[in-house]
Amino acid sequence: MEFRILGPLEVLRGSERIVLGRRRGERCLLGLLLLDAGEVVPLDRLVDLLWDGDPPVTARGTVMTHIARLRSLLDPHRDGRLGVRIIRVGDGYLIDVGAATVDVCRFRELYERARNTAGVAEQSALLREALQLWRGPLLADVASERVRQRAATGLDELRLSVLESWADAELACGRASQVIAALADTVRRQPQRERLVGALMLALHQEGRQAEALTVYRRTLDLLGGRLGLEPEPDLRRLHAWIAQDRPTVQLPPLAGGPDALRRLDAILAAHAGDLGPTVVVISAAAGAGKSTLAVHWGRRARQQFPDGQLHVDLRGRTAASALRPIEALTVLLRALGLPADRIPADVDQAACVYRSSVAGRRLLLVLDDARDPEQVRPLLPGDPGIMVLITSRNRLGGLVAIEGAHRLTCDTAHSLRSAP
Image 1: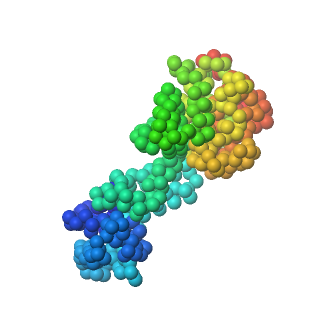
Image 2: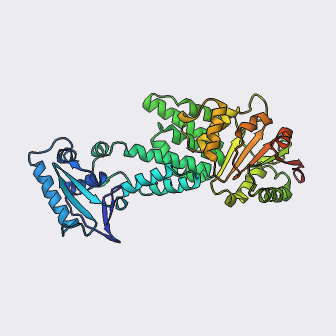
Image 3: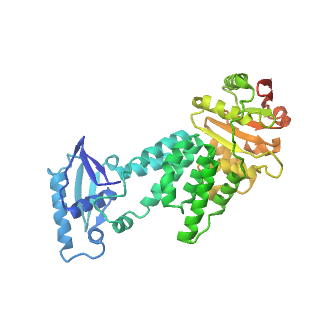
């Protein structure tokens, strides 16, 4: 049998849906037992939840009658041959079913597997599978909102945490459009979930929808202040400032270096297969030559070469005043990798160590856009051979070529390419 409680209560035998009867209390009792499958639920707790703290004197007897009917329906032979038994243990009841047959158990198990998985693409897949188990509110057709809150303390919070982790993983994989589609309604309903708000803003920005990202922030600001009397946390304010400082692109710039640059990047990637360290390429050209377009376009072309995703950071190196500090860039990267803000070190060396550990063993493309100088970039370079780093800059960044062994593509015009090892 298969039991579903993450939404309306359903029991399936193969493809056949079992009719549970019309008694709402009986169906709610089954749902409460399934919520704690494999554990003893005291009879007094069942009574309290079924009657929401105001049971009649006949309540205990009614529960026993419900149990008898459920046994007749789900375990008529009283031997568990159908994969389910309802057992009296002391002054309580336990439903004995396989954890894999109950959607809430699978949800928790998928979340734990994702937490212990290194690859961001695999994390995203597991978290997506967990979220797809939800068909609506817990026990939507048999339990009141108050009973849901009392019976499943923390389950809704866990669902939102899974959604946050999934959004971070999707952004790390370069799938901003899917994040936008999934988060828009939730962010409107729950503006206090600032990690979700930030993920939506970042996804919109990555899709070139800067104005919409800023609108999300302003709407969140109004809702937090008007409904809850709160102000956004510093992390969300910093993200807003970072997006607000970016200049929207009115017209798509040319592709720096033209097709020759794409072929050169293909060749560099192929030549460095099996190396002991990351592959680093500096794309240098004047403002407006299309450096960023080249990096993004090639990244999309080579997406299958980087199954664990792509990370993109705008280093804002146009001027010394606007340039992102290394610790700020590391914070952006670690947030995109799913690390909560309170676990990101404030010290740049410590943050760099956490960052390198987080990407170890992954095959990623890292785009460091608009770098100002080598000192801004060096703390962001990973040590893993599975990672390719594209650095765009208006400057030549000769120190990265001389010391880190970076390749340099110098694009004198939109169609002129010179390369150096």
